[in-house]
Length: 456
Image 1 (cartoon, rainbow, N blue to C red):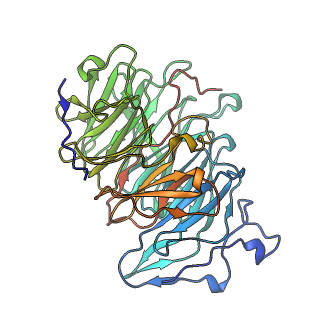
Image 2 (image 1 turned 135 degrees about the vertical axis):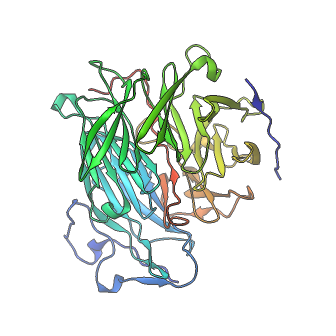
């Protein structure tokens, strides 16, 4: 299999965000958390020129993982106070339109929604204090997938409580009222995933009594729910990981990948086996990065990275380490799908240009991963990473110095770290989408043991 050869090119106002307990002692909102901001004095602050660079939502690692803080990137300052969540989140995600933070609380069967406080209003940007919006509920929320203006939130279900797996399709409009556009309940409990594609959702289906799913169902929206419109005929054993672009969705299988092509409401599929992908015995693709307008998919088989060409049904391996003895710690695409950001376990950050898959920049020792706190879920990356803003920046949680490391994606230059008053854990960027309908397709960060049966 041909490997890519890298051509290295190294080379206004601050809103007061405070605990409402200081203002309204004893008050709690509908979720049971202490609300932030509040009062008529916290009305809109209008940004009349340009777009706001956004904010970071950051979990604390100071022995209280359920405390959420915000850092305003325009003011270059941490907003005062913090938001008390109901439970320590298993993951943080951003809504399709970038306005909301979703705090996944898998073990508590809920997802809390936080308004990041930035949104477009006519010809200006409104800035308000971040605050809790409400809660989505369901058994074991786990995988979260964004495609275009939609997100699909997959709940694994709970066999012990006889609660089946389900999917909720979300938009920023529905999240304003802590609701969903439509949902669907499956006939089994399984660790699955769903890809939203307009009125269609491609969702996993399991026929075996236990284990990971092996089928993909086609669901068609009818009002607030979905009807089954058939099942993709080809199997995808032990299905884990998915991605979508404008025409295709892909799924990771133990024996290869399943590529599904959409032409209107007609779906065709092909299976590409592991030998064709260049994978050895015991290797498999388990996750993807993708973006609506990016024609290729980035597939991950542990530390190996494959560039999938869905129209040809083949792949090429990205020689991202260039001989270095390192492992992959974290990865992401920028919002336009123009750059792939890779963080290795030595703390080096590599930025790859997706136009030709060459190395755009290499930042040595961007962060010290040895001092980073392990993830709350007990698995996955030790360093939390998010990408956001225009121009795009990479933000890395740096626990040992109470700061966030910042790298400019275009230049590869280290910017001034963001100083905090607490030890940071997981983080995500929240703000404004770069333009209407331009959203990245975000792979969630769950790096599950694929042999584990999530029925329990």
